[in-house]
Length: 365
Image (tube, rainbow, N blue to C red; front, top):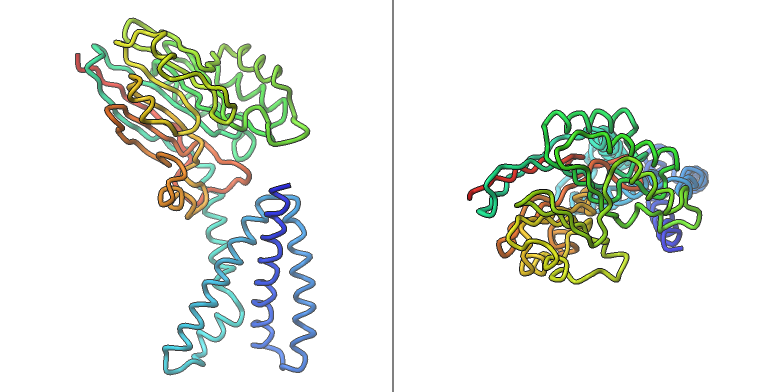
């Protein structure tokens, strides 16, 4: 119901704004006495164009961009007219009258975002510790949301790139699949991911979307999901730990949206606290708690680094997550948050890149 109310608000706002833009264009080309009729026709066209908002989130995004940019340029036009000597400048008049800039800028942003989403890049980080006598390499993939913008061939190429790097582990930090992923797609993607060559294995924690919690009619059951993951040789960690070798421990957390998570200190007490402890947690929260409990590295996703500009900037400004993207050190613990290998809802990314992460863990012992 929440998404429907949001869609209705966007629909109403966009329709009103598009009507205003249409009326301005009419005034530029049609005599005033017939402008009202033409504008009503234009409004009808706008309503028809807005109907798809109920069927695709991409239309929501397009209409939202046009609407916001239209309002911005309306304000710019008011300021220009107020503070320039010639308020009837011909170029300004026609750009404003035909409302070209909001439409053109939206088209450019959506086109860029479409191709940017599909261009998955490698992002590298380095951490070091005096707990380790050897160097290790860890790969991380999160927020693939399989089916939104990627297919089996693209994921296969991604896994080949990781396999070629002789990584010690591949960490899948949640939201690999979501509510739009079909049963067949879900099974295919985990089979491909499970074939990635690593020294110690492929490990997985749930995100808030993997189990299709936000739909009344999921495409697969939780048991089908678990079977697909485990049959692919991937280890699921839900508030559990695994000892990789004498100096390396991996802990996987239940997603914070599930509730009932175990205390972090109790999880670490079950491990060798002198080992280098990596915590996989889909959502980037509780850094201080993990650091004080003895964790050395946390890896997370979830934020998509905003995905749609300026979402990431707002996340950082208002502290929506403890770290919206990148690397940070908190009380001696390193935290790495990825923007994700894809995005949710629509196949468009206008902020940051789609990525997989390679972390070089250097021993200083």
